[in-house]
Structure formats: structure tokens, C-alpha cells
Length: 138
Image (tube, rainbow, N blue to C red; front, side):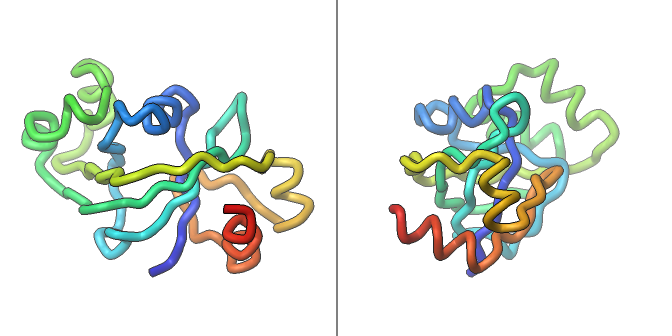
């Protein structure tokens, strides 16, 4: 399985790291990534990798069902959920099985300089060099 970089707003990353948020919502996401590892890239203003998470099942469901089954675990209020999925018939809930904070500083400047990193809009595959470098620090 390939490791990915998952771009996420800082408030959601904080809730994942605290263990409160166990479902990450996406408008679309490939099911074949179930079980993969993901580096959490916190978007602006933090702009850094902060944790590695183990993804579990990928639940692609009709939006109404997604809310009923996974709304609470997503830590998103119903209004925000409805706005996010307003033009979609289906959405995706990604199970977050476990998380591990990264101890080293992986800020965007370092990532760009050492790994030619570009922050993903939603997600992207992590380069082998990045995976090896972070793995050596865990």
C-alpha cells in the first residue's frame, strides 16, 4: 500500500490527534487506499506535516446516510456538513484507526527544499524519499 499526504485544516487535525475525530470526510476519495498510512499536512496557517495516521475502511455512502452513520464521529456540525456536500449525491467517510504525532519539524519550507514537496489540495501520494525520511524519525 502506498502512503499518502492528506491535506487537512488545522482544527480538524487537532481533533484527529486528540482522538475525538475518527472519521475524515471527503467529497470523493479512492476506496483502494483503505488500510494505507497517511501523513496529515495541516494547511494554512500551519503549513506542516504533524502526524501519521492509519486509515481504515473507506465508506462511500449517499450523503444523508453518511451523515446518519458518521456525522458524530466526523466532529462536523450538520450545517457545515450540508454545505460541504451540497452538490453531491454521495460522500466519503475515511476511518482513522490510529494516529502518531511526528516529533520532528516538517514545515512547508523544509518539505519544499528537501523533497520538492507541493502541498496537495486534497491528497497526493507521498514520495519514497519523504516516506523513508519520516520513517527513519519514527
